[in-house]
Length: 337
Ligand code: SAM
Image (cartoon, rainbow, N blue to C red):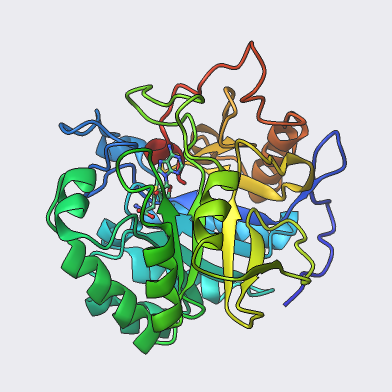
């Protein structure tokens, strides 16, 4: 569904990009400890009062949809499935006019149980993260023995109609970079759409290294050894994934090459953290506090204005390759990936 142009104006930045896709982090906590994301002991979590309440989240999403032209809402985290009010939040967002498309990025743990409820609440589809199909590797990589739960979650999502079910995989050198063809074979066999995500400098431990990260070119070369890939003729638009048809299609595989093939020029995203800060970019070093304004009594028009101002400051690109690049203070798990 396309939104009617909001009366007061959309989220447009100085480069003319319009943000229509809102990523909302529902919590900074997670029940996995992926080595490329979080230290084993976890992180200093946001305290309860710092987190937006369910009503506050719905209100800010309503402002984004009704006043700012947002048409896509993606819930993420941390791990969004561990937020108790998730289904209620989804139901309220699904009742907005115009109704946005609603998706969820999750590690899939518990999704087998929750998928029917979330589908009934109005969730349209899911992205499930899965970096390996090997149980021991999964346990080492995520520091939790939960591969079976993730696989059950994927199956549950498909059975509940949360489709297309997309699978996100991050490859790391010497850890799981030999698994690209197996992951694709698994996705094809189950009717999931696989996307590889290049590892980005967003880990809490600052362990990312440009010199050793697995690049899109390497991922494609590895896949090409086992599958016939051809460029997908479909219009890419603002989608972060560049896609290829597998064996002539219709199956596809995508690569989100944020580092080696950045797509910032077409970015249409705006982000809201679990503590109510607007971020114009994953890599932004600035945030705008909507929670303070909301709790201070700001009306919807003022919240919308603050959001517009925040997005005006969006930079042309993430600048990872710039010598002056600074990794944002918040890690991916606290921003909302
Ligand atoms: N817990 C949920 C999940 O596992 O999908 C949502 C949050 S998680 C931060 C979202 C996605 O970000 C996952 O697919 C994860 O693999 C990815 N991710 C985390 N850290 C990353 C990094 N440094 N570079 C690239 N992707 C990363």
